[in-house]
Image (cartoon, rainbow, N blue to C red; front, side):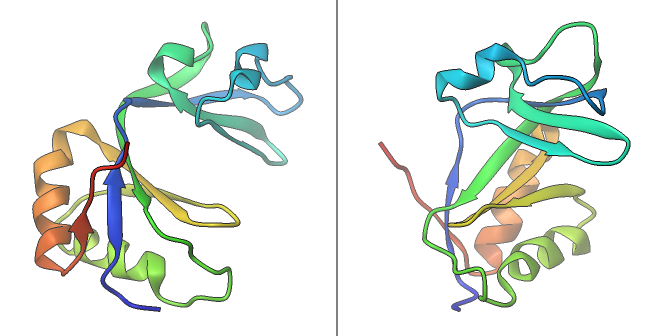
Length: 130
């Protein structure tokens, strides 16, 4: 896998919400927006656009998201490292989610300039998608 990736900055601001382990997914999640849910032994974490975030739960707002704008095979090694390592080197904390087709990186909105400059310097390309 090429370490130089095409990246798309998603438009929305995202929120991480923590719900009880056995909580049901909010019905708004069936509307087709980009959302992620991760259920563990202790919690249900939902990552959603801020406008869709559930009310009255523990949450962190103000995240932006980069999507790797190309297909990533599950067996491709080093993809996340090529994004996370340069950001770690400049002190940017990230949350990564991998799907069957690609990877997503979430970071605080206040780090947007640092993230884009750092990743461009590392050889990655930002593209605009319609």
